[in-house]
Length: 461
Image 1 (cartoon, rainbow, N blue to C red):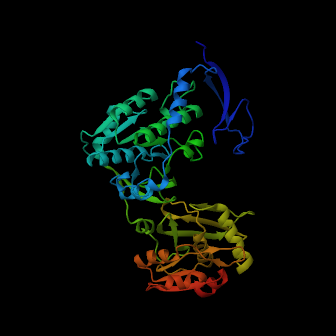
Image 2: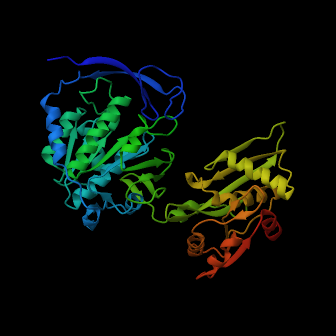
């Protein structure tokens, strides 16, 4: 029998592009210095013999299904027992799906999935928790803090993917948790665990098990210093849903964000609080974001952003003061730094504000990262409030996108934003003029429609 040949291949860590030689720039994703060398074993042509013929024969038997004849049942989703997680997933875990959960070390990924396993087993679902990083005693210590588990919960500490796959085929659980994908080792790939080849091939095996057996698989992925999941970028393309755990691990609050979901909307968030017994849900996210607001302080404005289908009120703080240096300092936390510089340039050009000699610091409280342009008007008002040292009413909320000409543009789902502000007791809402009529429907609070930043300045200051 012919022996397999060992070759050296270069892979792009960002997109998984394969090359026979090292290249400075990846031709697939155009990123620099992402190629790494790995040794792979290639079987000679024709070595599989009858196995290839068997696969060909099975392929001839495959028959397509009529799309209109496929029925979708409600029981195709399994509730995790946590409303915030179900919201991010689009209503629960879909049977036969593959979900990736990423986050910084110590953020609470293993704790969250262990709580999901406890809830699923309590509902009578068979769950298999596979750990490649901790011993059974370590997992048991964490499980005792969370609560009691029943006989439907199984634990396996193993890194050999072939052994893991055999246990899954034999047990046939309804849900499987892999902690983590970087520790799984496939003997068919001659590379170290956690490498590009190992992560890609291991995920491919788990994907086939999930789709073939109808098992819901949740895998934990480590993240790099840039905050993305370690390994090839193709990993996020292979899975059905990608969830990121955000927040400071030294703080008590965590935010779970869905960045990809084939079965629901993206950019949905769930808010959790880390307690001694594990992660607790925070259903009133807007109230949490606004807790501890300062009274009678300039530079504080409440704006509304949409996270998926959920309107969320956030406090925007700004501090503007004259600089003692030749070049002013600008800093943004929780929002895009370049966007803040752009909005300050609009204020200087369109409203005559002399901000070129001022330091400016902008902060979105609560540890939330907001990229939506609907908070532009809130950032502008916070900067103006701090620059003029004028306090804005704590019962006022604003939202709207600001253009380069100083105009205030409309945003989507304006009525839902106003309803969220009204629910939390706000009395006035400043909105784009094009959204004013829609916002007045079924609303009892005062609606102020504005067309430009200068109009906002004349009305409020």
